Image 1 (cartoon, rainbow, N blue to C red):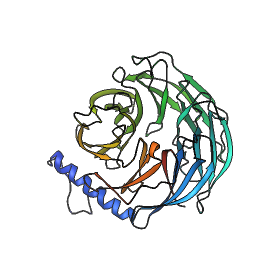
Image 2: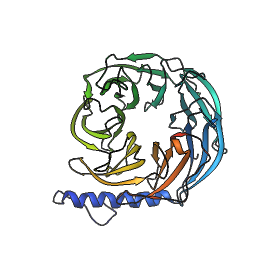
Image 3: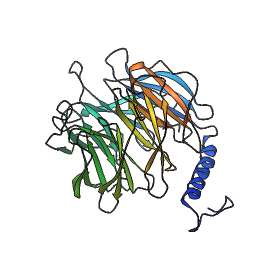
Image 4: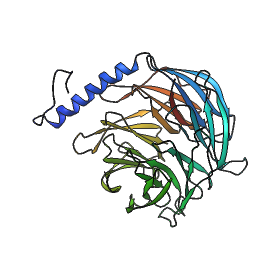
Length: 393
């Protein structure tokens, strides 16, 4: 590593290489954190007082989160994603009870000065209860997971940010061992591989991660040579996180409160599991389910949220084997942490506590990754369920 006065050669130990990676990441993070500001958007459920999507201004120098109010009124915008040019934002409109129009995907234009969102258009999600969406690396295609119907759809993104009607709709059949939660397919997340050649679908109802070859020119999919991988029966796979090396995938399992580690073959899209660990502390007996999972940019720490235990589970990642070792459980200072996100510099982590109606800012330790709360919870957003950072242009 030229420029840092020491080079990691083949004779170094895994522990020493891990320390060096962490130190370099700390230096880069500190450099990037000076004066950096972001817009933060919170997606919500609009079953109560919430109006839709809320906006904030975030300063990485001190972790200050300043409310900007309602960015756009929208029905149950429970998951958000932004275009890589930072000009457009997309939201699912989940309809969990049928009382409000939903089951759509909405496109917005972002005003970087005010944080306001301008409606561009809205299209059907081609299923019930859309809960997650993702843009491919070209920005020309958007995939959406529909939890209620267990369907996945792929729709084109036009140059002006508007969405076209879904070109592909995929559905699987079957069930798993939990008769209440796994009576049928429940698509919960869609993830494009780092090289954009594959599309992964986590299905909670079937305990499977489906893998498709993805054609970024046509927006089409076909089953990979190994079309799916399994988690333990009843685990209920929910969300996935790629390691920065692109060769390991971590799956967080909602019903089993576990994380399953998979080796990933970028050439074939094949997954093979090699570890499963609990997200809960030893001896915990209460009811709890998991929600979100993320790996830091250095590839040294994994985070997972526990709803019920109301904590962020923190794991260290072995630099050679990529196995997980439990480090800590940070209380989220609120109830039901459905979603969290690391800021782009890696210096802070924001948690949306759905049932205590607040967002909590944590400072991330630059070497250990452990979390320390910054100030008091922000309580102006009812039922926050998604956190999205958008760089200021």
